[in-house]
Image (tube, rainbow, N blue to C red):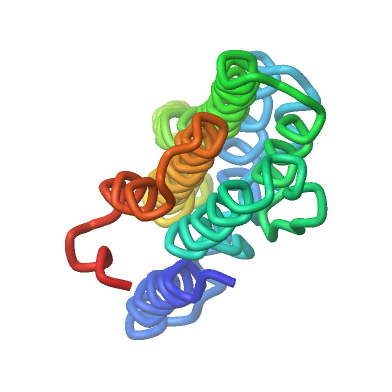
Length: 249
């Protein structure tokens, strides 16, 4: 679990709710029409822009930002170096008994054991990496759309409220509810965008980059093993993907 995401969401909502409670009860900030305009309009817009399957799957994408298990590139490098030593000593087929902790690495091992040469191996693994990046981009794109459309529908709610207020300007009892829709719809759209959608997009993009880096390390490492690169030289080459402060581990 990513504690930073959980703590950040709790802290952000706590600050907002705290500000609300200082000025009065929280129920005065609950407006069903405004909420329906923002949430319903945003979901409808996402269904127009994306496939149904991708929109439904965006919930899983959201949970990934909370429940993600970050991959340790150093651990992957250590496994690759261990594999390089095994292959150098006993041959590439000896890797058949090696059990990797990373599924992508295990798949690469299976290709090697099945007789794939370095050119074919690089082609297959690179394609898989590209497909991964495309899937991540689709998931992130949906939440980017939420970040764009939630404030837009908040503004639409504001305009609806203003029109209702102007139409009923002679009826004081109708002005209050219209103002509530106008103000709270914009508030809802802003909160959804800035506490959920925008931060989630940034976090998911970071996780995607990290996962792609780990998989590129695997590709480079497996090609090196295929070509019989010295394990020590391979280790130093793979560590260039790490920050300088992490290269001594």
